[in-house]
Length: 415
Image (tube, rainbow, N blue to C red; front, top):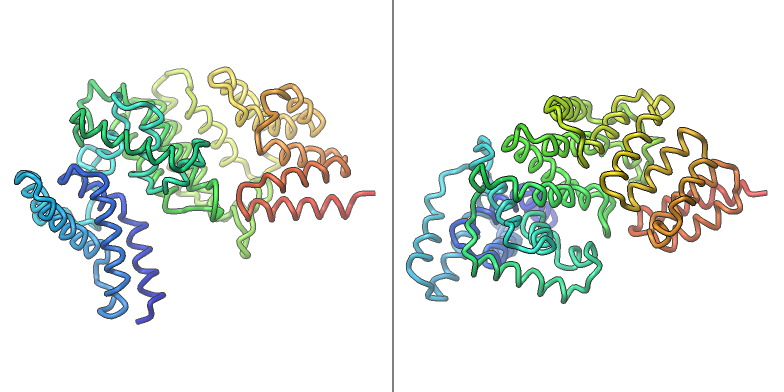
């Protein structure tokens, strides 16, 4: 067997089951770093053995068993208290088949890990960072970029958060029903961040399907746990509706395709149906729409439009107005300007951008939005200048290539 084939099998197994393996190790050892280190050791061992021995019938179970044995060895060497060792050895009795039936939200280790990371005793920044590290598997560098701090600073923040969990005796469990509300906002926020990092990564590949899929599953578990929470239902709807567009977001050559130009036949209509059902359940609670539900309403309008020209931009602008009133941000303001541009024309969209000039001045996506609105308005020279600025601040290589193609189009058409 080739090393490449074995490496691909290892990568697939880790992408599918990393969170379950780490969560189960944390639950019985109580040591977050040990759990991650033991999984990494198991991965390295797999890369050595699978090219020689062949890929096992159940790669995830092989990794779990190897990581478990490594945890037991480490704890023995550390000569930790006997209760710790018994807990580690109890992993051998773990009966759950990783490829078997879903145990339901209350018994799911992923949900336990998520709520542990979002304990109210932890600072909000620490909750989000630890969840991105432990649940989403992001590197310290990636998390530091998201928080706009140095990698060293983020490493210290993660260490302090883990120490706080240990010293405060924070349990690895889903809290009692009457304590769920104090963690719900943080849980929803971090699930949304995980999805965003998978759907539109801040660096590297244009998409990380493993993260996006994990976030969709986590949102579903939280919605099961909180079936009367319209925001939990709204988030699940939002992620399903957005993720349904994944296959159409790139062409056969891997180049980005904007929503306007996507082949809607390639959208996942089963996910759209599930998203619309979750959105209907959120509406049925009778509560005024919140942050996630309003975004789900917008995604639903896109999902149900036969084509870009049939999109109900008037309702989308109304939804963005409600979002801005609820939670002002440059992202929402810029998206509203785009919607205004489609509803009332590109000059109106540019005016909407100018209205928020100071607020949007340092936002990296501003040049790309202005460039597109200027292109639609026929102002090619100004559009080309804005596209050059957008290329200079592009976050990923696929995004940069897309902007360069647009720049080439307007430059060629320029008088």
